[in-house]
Image (tube, rainbow, N blue to C red):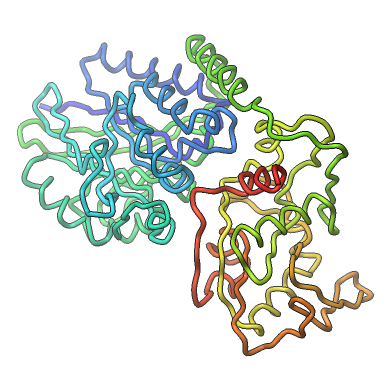
Length: 462
């Protein structure tokens, strides 16, 4: 006798609620349809549902997102890096107080090695037909960030064998909620064929019909609620084994129905968030003007605040990180959040003078100033000019519009190529390929949970 299990999944919503009502409507419709046929249904979220770029998530410390996930009636969720490292320790520790679903993450601990009460290493779902489905989750490994927030994150590669050994003795099939990215998913599928399905996230990959690696079915539903994924599992109940598995994605742009209850819930949460963020911060006698392609009062203030907060020798930040000027008059938390919505933290990086010169040369190019960046926490449009505090340089304009950096001074002293400098900057420069010299600095120090907008508020209050 054969029966079917249907698994629906979303991932990396990043607080883009434009399609949320459609997602609720679609999954409710499909779930009811299959349940009427006597089939089993499970629903999972792959993490990064919270993103503090949205006022709803900012004002509620992500708890508004959890209310929305409750309304979807999901069966499990793995935290992403946005839940894990953009909230304070206390905010994450209380994020799931009202959750009506298990949080499946096997590699997050308190500093003493104990597990938070709100996490589960795995969960075994027993279907009506008696089949046992084991589901576990692992999240991305950012040890320096988690350590700064007083969490202990363990390498997911070091955890997976132990949890798989447990599940193999308990379950008929294994599902892995992975917030690790497609490359890790592929590698793990090659090494652990006992996993039946990997529900992927983090790298926002879109796998329209899934991808098979070593017999493991990999899935990924993009980002921002563009798609809902469905996995159809055919089970042979005589041997309690999977005989078929298929994956497909449904575009929410093509789904015309919305859930009115969900729309009202989002409107109510946004209204409550507005009340929280309308808290006054200060009063400006004149506008803080902004220019993405040359120094301006607002970006100069930000560079100063980073240098002062991090106690660096110099600071550097791209002007495009500020989205709008700050008007004169009363300034609220909502204003600061609107013009600096990024979940980006300040940090210190120690690099040698010759490396610092390479960063300055690269940052001074028109290509970098006009670079359209997506990801790494950046929620703006273009990088803009690099703004410095404590560092000046002389540049020659070339015929092609580029600049040739000739002389560099740190606090009025010529740059020493062999000396190590303490550079205060933003964490996104240390995470990816934008500036290799910064990402490979000899030492890094992250300031958590302060975001750039917290530094702006701090500087304005001064």
